[in-house]
Amino acid sequence: MGRILMVLTIVLLLLVTVLGWGLGPAMEQQFVPGVWIWDLSVGGMTAVEAAPHLEATLPLHQPNLVVLGPEGQRWSFSPADLGMAVDVRATLERAYAIGHTQSGADALVERLNIMMDGARLAPILAWDPKPAFLRLHAIAEELDRPAQDAQVRLEQGELVLVTGGVGRRMEVSATLEALLPHLYALDVAEVVPVMTEIAPEIVDDRAEQALGMANTILAEPLTLLVPDPQEGDPGPWVVPSNVLVRMLLVQVEVDKVWVGLDKTALGKFLEPVAMALHRVPVDATFQFEPETMALEPISPSVMGRDMDVAASIARINERIQIGEHFIPLIIDEIPPNRPDTTTAEDLGIRELVAVGESYFTGSSSARDRNIRLGASKFNGIIIEPGQTFSFNEYLGEVTSEEGYDESYVIIGDRTVPGVGGGICQVATTAFRAAYYAGYPIVERWPHAYRVNYYELGGFGPGFDATIYSPLVDLRFTNDSPHHLLIMTEVDAARSRLRFLFYSTQDGREVEQIGPEWGAPEPPGPPVYEFDPTMPAGIVRKVENARDGLQATLGRIVRDAEGNIIYQDTFVSHFVPWPARYQYGPDFVPPPDAEIVTPEP
Image (cartoon, rainbow, N blue to C red; front, side):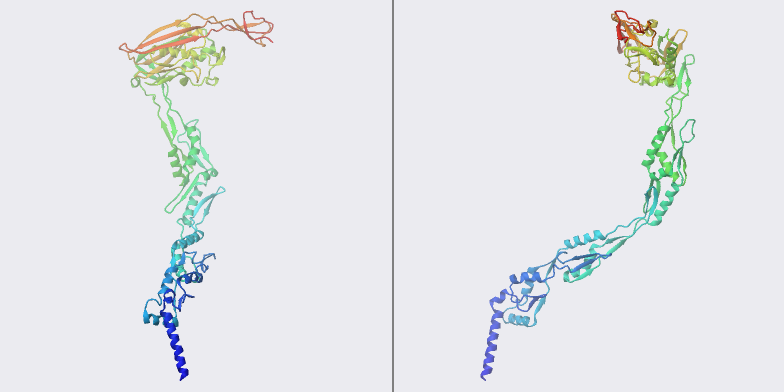
């Protein structure tokens, strides 16, 4: 009996102890014994004590998740790498709530049940998707492969067919969706990324079609022809296949195939061709017949032409694609301003409005020929209203190839033989005609010294004009509302050159003033120059002495009402020009001579 009482006493004391502990104030700060968070027993711990144990026991930093690539690649990640973390506070709050929701005897019963049966709960996880997307996008950059369109490529001067290939794309969102359950379960898993095949847009048969078209173009050289060729025309131009292949442009697209020659490359090839084919239109030249008041052609007009480069390129590409290799270029005609059919009435040419004349008595045969040839360049030309006449422009090249002879010309301080001597006689005559016509004279230059030819006929010094292409020119402007026809005539018997200006009188009148001359300037002592090729004791005079002086020629031009429209002054300063001699060995120049090259 005594032993039974003692056992009952012990049980009662234990029960009282358990009840006191289970309902005591310490239990309010601790997790109930028997509470587990996955494999971590937190019973009897406070939240502060359990927190570090919780993070340490979860496999957040173990690389348990593996992404397997299609070529055997492996990328291992821990849940933390993919943005997974445990919400410690929320997890511990949920664990603490177990056994702390009741009070009194109910709380005691609840806690006894927990201690006997245990309570296990999962941690509360917090996921930030951004790291997972970044990791998977990095994998996608390695796995993604664009589709390879079929194409035709130039390699080492040969066209080759590059076949198409299927591409692939990793679907990041779908892959993450497959990975997510394992991520939340914090378990070990291998995931194969979700891949999508990408078919090429341009398939092999389209590229093969383009290759066939290209080979047709390159089958033989391209020959470019001039339509309706004239005698002396350049061409044809042949573009060999090895040049064509560098111009070739192949465009293979989803809905079309185009093979032709690149416009820029073909245009560069055609630039010199266009220059060779260019022809400036030539206006007809005319003479005026006063009796009939009609124009008679002296030389016919000639059509000009230009190659239409853009249209030629279009034609070449159009025809070469269908296998043609002999292709005519597109040439546009450029009509002249004044064809042969131009009439005097069309141009307002009715009468003689001015005459300029000069005399070349005593000229050498070479100078005579040069004057005739130079004057012929101006016979029959027409100057439009508002156009400025340029002597050098119409004269052209003065060379022996153009038919000019060698005669004396002024170069620097010397009169020396030169091709075209006598052309200034033509310029002087044109100047006089423009002067008397009352046209504004834009440019006129006097000679360096007085030339006797230009003082013949009573003109005197100061009524001349010199030219030296391209620096020194004679220019005047046709400021009338009518065209001006220039005709030239040479009177061989009188050694006279005339410029005849035909147009329509507008009532203007020209008053000549002068020329007036200053005091003569003596030429100074004669100049002697030694010439070792001359015979001994011989001297030869090569230039005559001429006085220098200043000449002033004026002009007042009035309109039909008498109003002054132009008032001009043309000043010429002729430098003194000493006599010049050449002498051979053993000749002694006079004591007053200037010796520029003495005998050695």
